[in-house]
Image (cartoon, rainbow, N blue to C red; front, side):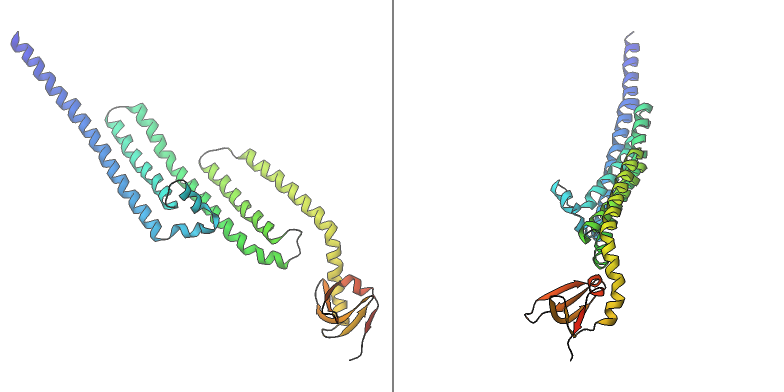
Length: 272
């Protein structure tokens, strides 16, 4: 009887060692290995992005300052953190499978499969932020030279947020979020803005068109340096522009006269 008890205890200790202690120790070793590998991969990603001066692409967006205000050194740290959790959770899922915990392992695996989508969505959003800022800087000069019923700054801001909005919609779609309501709201806003601009340009564009049409006739009639009198204005022609003509008075003041007015006005030229 005593021998049977001793054998039972001995067999129990062997089972405890082989199937509990060793089993758990191996599982812990896998998790520790995964943590170390994840740290190394994160370090490589962060180091590489800082070497490539990744933050410099987003200096003008204000994003780098925002990231630093919440405790990160820069954007590479956030991307490195996403990579870390992707690799680490992959090892955690392996460990759970090894421990024969399929339900929990399936949940962790689902997170692991979802993280690349999050990573891709973050990259798309960052790309849209960079592209929107880059384009906004390059539309200011053409807008200043064109006749549109918006200031260059307003147009640049609209372009920037349009690109950012498109990028955000794409990013949300990548992670599986329905963006149909957001898109329809955006379409309505753009339609309202377009209608407002059309009305605004319709009222203001007639005068612009009249001045442009009169430019050809005025440019043939007047030359820079001529002394003329138009109504109550007398002076030397400084500029014959597409929309207006500029006179310099004897007092040094400059007067801008719309071309459409000059076409129908009596112009007196002083002989040279």
